[in-house]
Length: 61
Image (cartoon, rainbow, N blue to C red; front, side):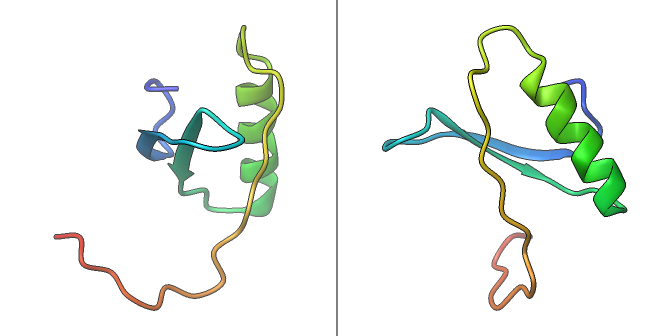
């Protein structure tokens, strides 16, 4: 994952999934390709994705 230039953040999380990756893709076609690439990584059983429609608060500097 760290080799993907679109990867902005990777966090280990509790709950149903082990990790949450924040990706930024220029197009939905590129996002689709990224999800395919991630799904092909050894040990990845499945992915779940959401698309940000609007950023309401951003406190990152």
